[in-house]
Image (tube, rainbow, N blue to C red):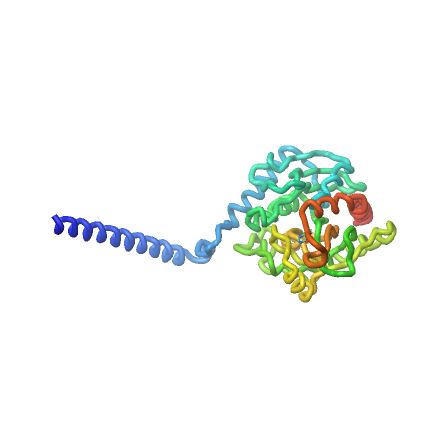
Amino acid sequence: MKKLISLFLILTLALIVGGCSANTSTASADMAATRASGEDDKWENVQVEFDAEDYYARLERCVRQIREKTDFVPDIALVLGSGLGDYADTVKVVAEIPYSEIDGFPVSTVAGHDGTLIFCEIEGKKAVIMNGRVHYYEGYDIHEVVLPLRVIHMLGAETVVLTNAVGAINADYSVGDFVTNVDYISSFVPSPLVGENIDKLGDRFVDMTNAYDEELISIVEGVAKENNIALHKGVMLQVTGPQYESPTEIKMFRSLGADTVGMSTVVETIAARHMGMRVCCISCITNMAAGMQEKISHEEVQNSSNDSSKNFSTLVSGLLSKMK
Ligand code: HPA
């Protein structure tokens, strides 16, 4: 009996080992075949799920679905951040499409980030408002985060005005002030340009020397001055979130040259510059960064940006009325 059991165990083991080596040899044969197939297949060896061809087809599918509902061609994209959604109530709406009605469009999971594309006229300019955005911290891949902006560019928009809520790292800034970015630090978030380049959107390597358009910056400065709104020109650092930073992280970010910290807009800036769009970013300071005030809460961030909504509207409308 013992002999029989041992024989059974040996046979089972032999089958398992045989199976494994057969799998291994199939896998290595697959890889060899992929390598042998040449240039076109080189991305199959890259260990990321991003498939540039599928992704671009999805962009085109989103554009087609939107085009079934409206033929409006926007010149400007306006991306509204947390608590700033009320601005959409003040514009002349031509068409509205909820993100959930566009198959393949990412939908936000965060309170205060309703997802609607609003095709409209603002100060005589043809614009599309992205009312609500998705964030990397929600678990979306970084390519998903920038997908809506890419679709909007394919609809015609050549300029994007990004808005968000940020914490102030610069001690000279105060809650309720605004900042227009003159530069950014993206080194703490993944690049949306990682993976096979989509040549139809832009070049593989993109210069970021003047990521934020100088003309738009000076228009925002002028509008702020005319309306007595406190506005700074600063450097924004994007983090992944969703947790707010530790006080020591904030000290590090300050030593790196950051004036503000937030969980969005820098990756959108990168995707927009990849497509050659003009970019302007206006941030509302909702809190002093960690270690500079007692505590930070999402409610405080939302309430502060709601309190600043009138000045925010003035800045955005002023910018749109003056931009060429
Ligand atoms: N840190 C990161 N993101 C933010 C903050 C902050 O302090 N305030 C608003 N968004």
